[in-house]
Structures are given as structure tokens and as C-alpha cells.
Length: 297
Ligand SMILES: Nc1ncnc2c1ncn2[C@@H]1O[C@H](COP(=O)(O)OP(=O)(O)OP(=O)(O)O)[C@@H](O)[C@H]1O
Image (cartoon, rainbow, N blue to C red):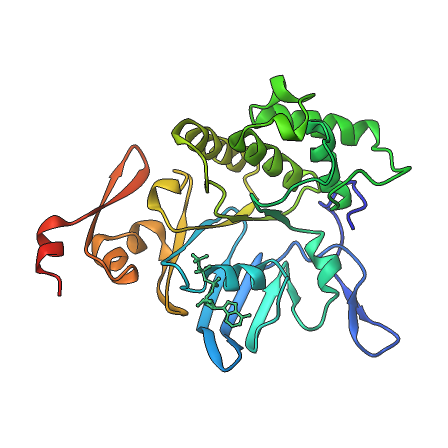
């Protein structure tokens, strides 16, 4: 669980616990990449869900993880979020190697925005945001936020354009408002890494655009934050996206700077369908390429 307070300090050191197994005893390292994945395989029930995946995410980088249904995006995001271990290879999250750390504690240092998250009682927006400090679905009994923590919650709610809905209760919020409240919640512990799992799913056009603008704003207000966003749709990528990885059947098809990866040829290969990619005002869209589609087998 998060204890609140600043996550900006700490030497990132680890010691060996009584069991001989290293344990995290201080804030994860500030130095080095935010995420390092090297030659990772994930095998479940004899199936390769991921094969030979490598990825390095540095502070200030904003990655998109794209691929068709079943490509392995969620499987990879679960490794990056310290939710699952790889079968083979190395995954380092905030400088900590999975398999050698307390995964639960490591998870408290990163923000995970999952639109399926739901509090278990009709909390007000500000209360939902405060649960980001305790990493719980309800307010912890007898826990009271400090004045600083309450102020930070209000600041994040304002930043995400939810100031007018701060006292609204969760069941009364629209899907888009919930999405923005969950981003504010994930930001409460001041994470260096934020993971987005299809944040625009189920949003109408206006709500999607508000959410993506909010993501752009938070990235500009937190220049050292690193993010990874999973989506099927190029239209759901914020303009501030800097890098992308394309997954196809568990393998990396392309990875690197967004301009080099989000090309007509590569996206067509990734989704096994001829599409044409266009970019307008910093955002991307994909349309079926009719001529090529008619020629396709
Ligand atoms: N525990 C598991 N055991 C066996 N197969 C699994 C397991 N978890 C996922 N899979 C399979 O692995 C493949 C990749 O799943 P994953 O959820 O990572 O894909 P995805 O790219 O996130 O897909 P979607 O876009 O549909 O959410 C799928 O074929 C899925 O059925």
C-alpha cells in the first residue's frame, strides 16, 4: 500500500532479507530506465503469448502498445505493471527486477489506469482520488489524508477538468468522467510510471477527446513521467505519444519512435489488413485502403 508523501527521494537501494531473497526497502531507483524488458517470453499452457520481446522506456517517454485482439498487449502490460512474471527473460520495473522484489510493494510505486476499476461504495470524486494513496477500492477506516494530500487531490481533479464534479458520487459520473477521475487517482502517489489499459474504451467522441486532452496536459505538467498506453485504435492515441511498439501474435513487429513505427505498411502488417495511416494536427487515424483491400486475398 502507498503511504502517501513524496516519491521523489530515496537511493533506490535493496538489501537481502532474512530469507536470502532481496527485498525492496526504499523507493525504487531514480536512475536508469523506467522500464527494461529483455528477451522476454511468456508461455502459458504450452502457448507462447509473448516471444522474444525487448523494450526500454525512459523518463519523459510516452509509449503506445498496439496490436490486434489477442496480440499479447495485456500480457505485456501485466509484466510492466508487476502483475505477472515472465517465463524467460528479464523485466525491470523502476530499476527492480521481477522475481527479486516484492511485487505488491513495487506496484504501489506505479500508476495503473484501468477503466474497469470501480470503488465498492458510492464515494465522491475526491474520495476516489484519495484512494490512490492507499491503493484500495474504499477509503481505509481511520485513515485521514494530510492537508497536503487533500490539496494534491484537489489540484489533480482540477488539472483533469473535473473541478465542477469534485463532490459528485461515483455512480452518477459519466464513463468519461470516471476515466479522468481514475487518472487523477493513479497520479496521487506521484508515480514515475503510468500504465493505461485501453483508457478510451466505451467513451463517446466528446468524452474520448476530453480524456486524451487530459492525458496531454498531465504529460506536459509532469515532464519526467513515463507512460505506456494500450489500445487497438490509432484514433485513441494522444498527440503527446512519443514511441510505439506493434505486437503481432506475441511478437514485436516494430518498436521505436512513433513516426518510424506508425506507418501505413507497418500498421497494415500488424493488423493483417491493408490500411492507410494519416496524421492531422499531431493525431493519427487509420482507414481501410480500399484499392489494396480489394486486391487482398
Ligand atoms: N492465462 C492464459 N493462459 C493461456 N492463454 C492465455 C492466458 N492469458 C491470455 N491468453 C491468450 O494469450 C493471447 C494474448 O492475450 P492478451 O490478453 O495479452 O491479448 P491482447 O492483445 O491484450 O488482446 P485484446 O486486444 O483482445 O484485449 C490470447 O490469445 C489469449 O487468449
